[in-house]
Image (cartoon, rainbow, N blue to C red; front, top):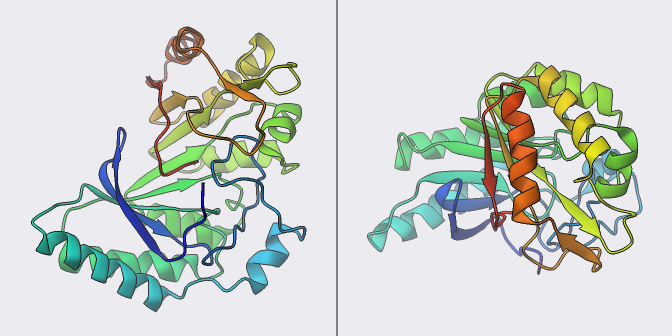
Length: 264
């Protein structure tokens, strides 16, 4: 899927988020992400620098640019007589990486309060920036937090998400965020080298969820061309079994057989 060339995209008709205007905080045409997920619809993260180094030097859109772009897009949508159910921070990179992420959130809240009062602001995040206190505080200013967790063990995190981030720290930080929704993508390849839907990865993942105690969990699989072309979707029957494991742990869980077009 082509990278976005601007801040806003859509609106997208999302199963989870309704009619949603996407807000891309990554630089135009440049994917900057702390993960390198095998299933990413935007392809591989090709920047060979560490994500923290890339974040420090990437040409991120400024808070003023984000506010201006969203305000203009909303005005055009409303002028057509259409509406929006959400403004969603997502796009072709990890939205919490920009150094000015807290300022972007405040600018977006100001625009929302002015032109779309009552419409929630959502974020789709891989939770890798939660070691930054300013990111955690900014996320608390977002109305809906959809946080990725595809793995409950380091091996699965590395093979599915291409990350060596400290998983225990991610889980601990997620447990400290109130009222989050964990979203989990389940995938497998032909050879079984990548598969987070088998018994042991699922058990480890449910144990992690029990530590986090999210408000809800969303389970889904791929439906678009992934970065790793040999991935397969996990059958709906298996997704339902996984969801039942979550419910038995006392956590609400919903299965989506088609992923949202925002990504993540």
